[in-house]
Amino acid sequence: MVTYRIERLNKEFLRLIAELLSDGVKNETAREAILTRVDCSRDLSSAKVYFTLIDEARKDEVTSALSSVRGSIRGRLGREMHIRQIPELRFIYDDSEKKARAIDALIDQVVQASGEKGD
Image (cartoon, rainbow, N blue to C red):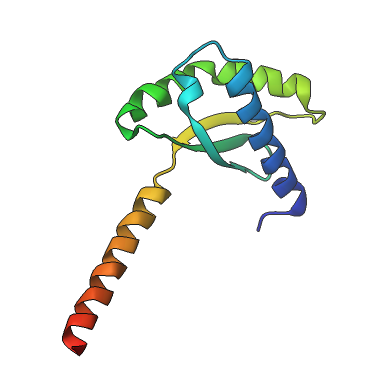
């Protein structure tokens, strides 16, 4: 169960990390990431930062670029936020949009097949 405090921290981390990626990172490849959500552990020891891309073919490049800048992002988060512990960041590619499109295609096929049988 995620507490209200953790939910607020997740939203704040998402906002600040997105801001730091767009303005404070020199690595152009890391800037291509579009952040979708952040999930912090209850003890704030780790945080999973989910991202997606416009060009899915560059997933490995962007993931390694984000991994290379995560230390500087964590340091800047420590200066921006007034909490005792800043979590270790892990960047994870979010493929939920791709899965949702596949499910939509399957639903469309079922609807089309049932429409043909009903005629």
